[in-house]
Image 1 (tube, helix red, strand yellow):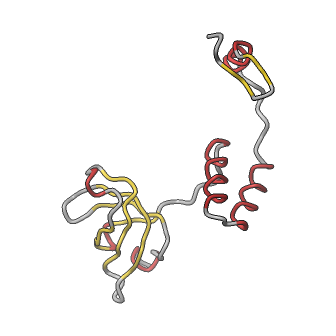
Image 2 (cartoon, helix red, strand yellow):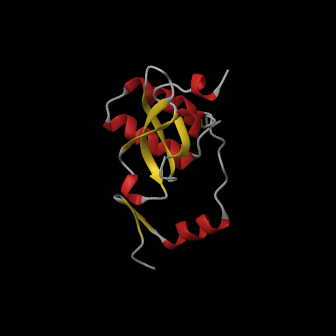
Length: 129
C-alpha cells in the first residue's frame, strides 16, 4: 500500500508544498485520482500560508501518528472547545479521558505560589506579590 492510499479526509498530515514550504494541517479533500490532496494549513514556515487550503501532491505529505494521550492542560482546552461547539459526545469522551489522568502532587514552586496568594470567596488574588 502506497502513501496516497493511506490518506483520508480529516487526517492530520505534514509535508511540503510545490514552493517548498513546510506545512502541517489536515486533509480537506483528495482528488479522484488520489494524486493531489488539499490541506488546510494550521502551521507553516510561511506565515502567509497559515489558515489557507493548499493543493499539493499526495506523495509530498505524510500522515501524522495519532497522539497516545493528552496532557492535563491540553485536555481542558479541548473540553472548552467541545463546550463552545456544543459537541456533547466529544465532551463526554474528553471528560472520561480526564478521569484517567494521573494525579500529580503539587510541585514545590506551585505550593510556594499558592502561599503567596490570598484566598477569598471570589477565588485567589495575587495582590500581595
